[in-house]
Length: 571
Ligand code: ADP
Ligand code: MG
Image (cartoon, rainbow, N blue to C red; front, top):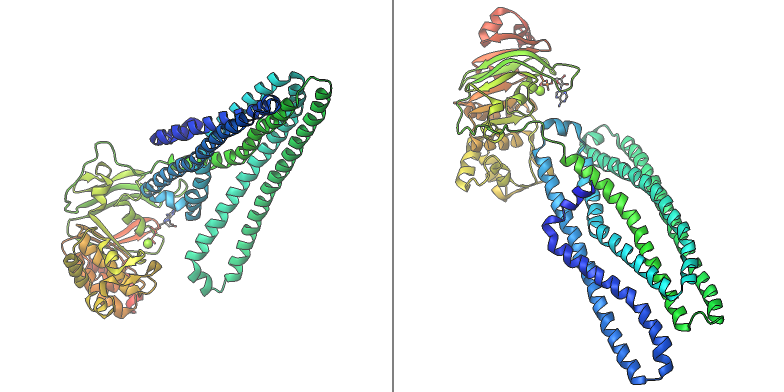
């Protein structure tokens, strides 16, 4: 895990070396200053050489300034290193999430992904900067200071070291506790985030059921749990900070008392005593750093672990190595004994056979939950079949690149997702880089022209979050315009008109019929009136494909379709 963490330093090697070597020099200077003070008191002061005192002080000033400058580098460039690593990881994470398959999003809460991208990565960034540097510097100053203390006075050095095990024990004890506390805290904040995401994106449902209280109650619980977890973490942190403070002051006192006694008996000069007290501080400083690391390390590493877990989740649907890039498909689709399930327990499709000839319009009808949408999700490989195969123009879709396959399939669903941006940008989503003329033509074909002309800003009109300002029919026409731009040979209309009123449906239906010309079209529809033009009708039930034939054939047959038809048209 740690080795993997370090691979992220590679692109920023120079920055790391600059930061690290500055920190080492600062540590050396820190180690040297008390020695200088000691020499100042014991040798320089008694000599009474004022000009010497001034020039030595000037020299010290220069060194202090150098140390200050280097500390600035360590602070600024060191954090820059951390920020760079954090940015790289965030970029990698986003790209990785973009590649994930549908099943991943079925099983992952958006709020949890958000937590990864924000909180976790910030902690990792802090650790990336402070981790290796502080650890090394701490070890170096600790060993250096103790060694110098030994040379000043062995007895005093050993008395000092006697208190250290208590300090180390305190830190280790708190470290373990902290680890647990941060873990709790992070899983709790992820839950809070997930609920915010859930309730906000579902706020319309919440308010229409006037269930705000219920949501608030659930939130209060989550928020309260997070509060307790964070409080617990800070309690341990405060306990350890106070404990460390007390023990370090205790050491200083011991040194003063025992040092005074040694000085009375002539075993220690004043300069050595002052120097020694200063070294106690140098010795203990790394312990401060280590206790800070003790906060950073478990937090950062826990975040990094979650980060790697996400990064290691391979997309379920991937191109094979020799996947074929198809330029243009005719759109001849076949399902051969296709079996598929979302989870192991229950097969949604079991040995389905289907054939859709290029350019044909096939309607799928049947009760909801029968698997119509599932059939359509398999064609663009949003999921892979468990067994059997799907071919397009005779080629197994698993042998084609995802990109070339999906670029030839257009999907219009009941819910149209609009991105924050202008109307123009939203239409152009069907073909990035489309010219204004192409966009206008697509809008015209989608019967959007009049509507756009009526807007004060026309194509440049901003569409609010999720296109709230647009009606269902308007959104649907934007989706259709996108399809005209995309111009795919295969078209899937999954209840595209189901949410519309009859009048709007008429307009959309006209646009859709025009869109379907010369394309293999799969239409899923509740209202049977909308599938009159279909070449063929497939009736899907929970038991598979029940009936197949033309509209008139199925009516004549007097089966499921005929009875559905009778119900809807009251014959
Ligand atoms: P239809 O479109 O005919 O209404 P679907 O294809 O959406 O039916 O669903 C078929 C079955 O698969 C249903 O039992 C449904 O609960 C289940 N299902 C659909 N989508 C998912 C999913 N993403 N994860 C798990 N089960 C699913
Ligand atoms: Mg469906």
